[in-house]
Amino acid sequence: MSTPHYAVIGHPVAHSLSPFIHAAFSRQTRIPLGYGAIDAAPEEFDAVLAEFAAHGGLGANVTLPHKQRAAAICGNLSERARRAGVVNTLVRTATGWDGDNTDGVGLVRDLTDRHGQDLRSRKVLLIGAGGAAHGVAPALLDAGIADLFIVNRSGDRTDALADALGEPMRVHPRYFDDLGSIGSFDLIINATSIARSDDRPMPLPGSLIAPRCDVVDLGYGKAAIGFLSWARASGADHTIDGLGMLVEQAAESFKCWHGVRPDTDPVYAELRARESALAVPG
Ligand code: NDP
Image (cartoon, rainbow, N blue to C red; front, top):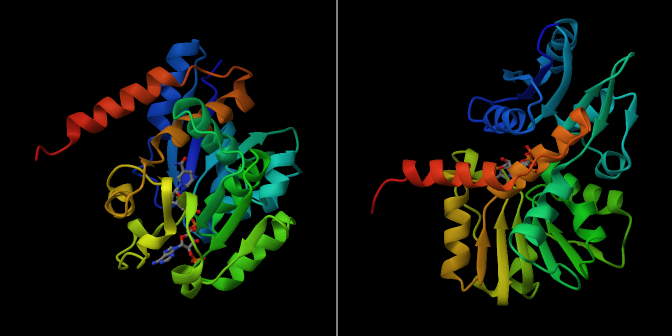
């Protein structure tokens, strides 16, 4: 029998750590699998997925910019994917694909289990309203935060995300221009892809940072440096990048496909060690 086939599909995708992570999970659990990375431009996504299935693809992670399209092609969505409106995990069925979203549980697990955060009653600012923001927002509300303020470059997407969450007492869409007068936050999460572009960083006022504020960038490596540096300079208590979330959401996807949740700590430690080894001294 050939090796069961899995992949991450995105654009770009060459930078993805998912093949490394799933290979490590495979060794740890002794579940054999092949996991690759497939680059697909937005207009190619459906055809690339069909070809992947035709060649025996059983499951896929979906990353930017395909998460919304992935939700649209699914026969069934898990409850968390339905609430998120976007899919990052596809599971092959007899007739097509089912979809799940593991981003939200991945972030909450990283913050609570790895970083010891208590999310209950916190006032949270979410910057961004793309696929990742849609995935993490419902999970943050479920974790018991008090208020979720959302800002995004495109105001219509801010409103769409707030409407989809359907909790007007706790969810507050705001404009970027409001940031100077919006008050301060216990937790600030950057869910934008701005660091991957050539655009200038967002001008953010230090007044957003409350005493003991924790600041999270869903990006990792070089992509998280600018935002987390701003946070530290503005007095943030803890700054956390997205590497832990990446490993946790991958473990949840692995569980969807194989029924086993791997131990994430050794894989996270290995990725951190690689990151340190690659860091330029000074
Ligand atoms: P999307 O393309 O779906 O959304 C991108 C978001 O970034 C939108 O809100 C967009 O605003 C905003 N944005 C892009 N460029 C700019 C800019 N120049 N100025 C202001 N806002 C901008 O991407 P995702 O939501 O999938 O990913 C967002 C980030 O989260 C990425 O860095 C990704 O790597 C990271 N991520 C990390 C994960 C992890 O496990 N650690 C998992 C998933 C994502 P607009 O709506 O106006 O275009």
